[in-house]
View (spheres, helix red, strand yellow):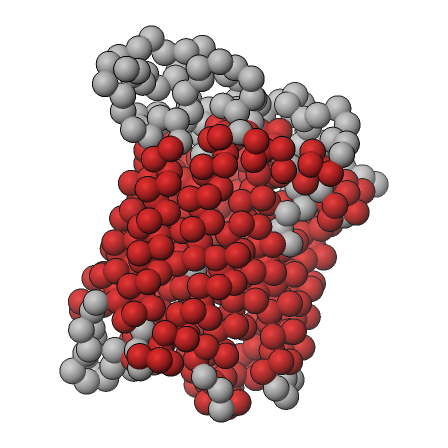
Length: 456
């Protein structure tokens, strides 16, 4: 017997916290696992006698497929029309969990690197594509006043999972080898399926009465006609070129700097702890409405770029017994800024496009991020093969992130103006800044009042 949808309206809590917990686990078993998977790349490179650039394509393909195919916003889009519109987010996420598990099991029996490209890159990436965007979009639909905090809580799964999975994966690699580790990861990722079962559907007043017609409306490409969303998309795409490099190469970079396997895993864990804590704190801060979200987004984007530059400049550790205090410190600083950025980059979307289009906008942004995610790690691996270490890799990716944050300066509310102006009327949270309301400044999602800006 089908379960009836909850009452119409944003509950701002209740079952929404269960949905946030499910999205927490989904994020941990997708992005969190991807961040720890870099520990296995040196073993794969040694087994198949391939370069760092070759093995980096495994994570790059998984990331690119996961984000490019995540454009399945219920109830819109070509993939969404075939899956989410007919069955809803709940069964889509459950099927995605099964695909992810099968991808790891399939890869455990790989006989070549191409086998891993298909298993970990395409199959696992496709499974992750079906779980992340619907889960995160469902969280946004359940909250209004505390939306950014709830999204931050869901995204904390990335850091918490990395804290746990980094040492566990290293233990599995040492005990069972990379084949046994991938087989066990297949069992772990099967837990994505019950998480999908918790995504109860919710109807909201801002939902369109019927799916949009026409290719531009169906794909959400009409959003690019609005300047604010175009600026946001361009900045995010550029940042993605460097943002995901630490997910793949932070652990190998620590190994290159002279740390042993478990100490390299500790570097990943420290970055993960800082990342997780920052997502919660920044989510609470953003919901207070003290500072406009675009301004916070630009600031923490720039700090993330500076953190990556610092990671690349860390000196070599004297011996494998050393703890690499300087690398641990800069990895923690990077994790703090990266966690804040990750919360804000999704938390700012409801204010840009309205709650009715937030999942669609999430999919579009992830499609753009997939371009950077596809090119960044292989470029990092190429630079490592050419220079002998990851210094140049982190300097380049840090520069990309730092440069992308400056594009965010074009978002409304990012740069204070020179004279105070009366605040405009606050649009309902279902509408967003881009819909035709004149002179509306970008608001903190669900804030009870608008942030007073200034004009010249």
